[in-house]
Length: 447
Ligand SMILES: *Cc1c(COP(=O)(O)O)cnc(C)c1O
Image 1 (cartoon, rainbow, N blue to C red):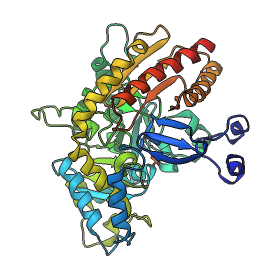
Image 2 (image 1 turned 30 degrees about the vertical axis):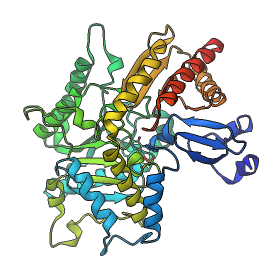
Image 3 (image 1 turned 90 degrees about the vertical axis):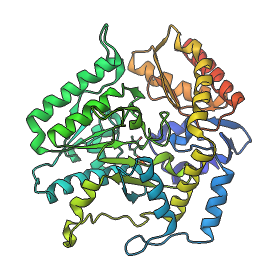
Image 4 (image 1 turned 30 degrees about the horizontal axis):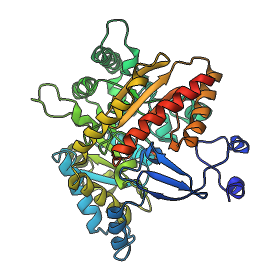
């Protein structure tokens, strides 16, 4: 079965020739945090199948909701029509922002949500008489997806370089990545320094800039670069001062991944008495459907919504996707949000996180580990390896060794990270921590 699929399926993010030596894992079924292959071997899905699966595979509650929805309405177009699942989901999500972001626009994948946010920002300014605002700002090491528009605000060489002739260049500014701290500098100092670099750009170009796009708290795909929440507070203030939209791409960090439902809830708005920082536009995808079905959305403030509200059709936001607001996907998302409530997930995750962090203690202090870091349900550390060929070897060996130890872990270069689903019991937390440590020791012994 594995051999046969080699030519017919072209796999994502893969040099297909590598599979001449490394076989694909043929998954037959999943249950809870575990995936099982055709031979009955099991793998703990410690990266939530590319960060989407929040409550395990074949989750009984999500399954039941989907089965019911399947017998009611599988799909209907969302232009001229509406339906209960999309209305309820939009209201639930808006309520989580205190209705600051009260208007939800739907698509199917993360990159499309980013495209929508960029187009909405530009078009809102254009409708408001500021058509010169056509440029975007992103962070060094940013990742916002791989369609042509999203790739233009992505700064990961591996994904971007081959296509750069096709892309409209964005402004790339200093990342607040806490690993950039100089001697004596705190993470908050780095964040303020990065905000200063952004301000220098805005002083010169604000009249041409539509929006700044940021992955709040953790820049995931570049290697789990974490920053101090004060960065978000500072950038919000700058965007207000210079009249720029702020887009938070919470595709990876949203849905409780960093400890709060939206990552930006951990930042306090300056001068607003502890109120959280809200962007003008937020993108959600990945975990929102519990890892069941492709679903993404952009949530917008009333000011942005009103910029399009008019008798003139062409002033509207005319973007569309065939499966916009698919009822099955929305129902999976509603079932996912219900689990957050029923199981008090954000609090339960704090207990899980403490246990996993305690289990990883020997790695945090390890002589060959740099920058052990954690936020919410994300752990990451960098192997102390510098030679690029050795880094590539480490990354491949770690993945294979982890599979031999019943773990699905895929390092990003020298960065090993864990992003497990929010359902691990105590034994699974311990197993994850112990085996990650053992795999690291064994791979480093060969490195
Ligand atoms: C995964 C991701 C995307 C792209 O989502 P896709 O569904 O893969 O297109 C965009 N932004 C961030 C932060 C992501 O992690």
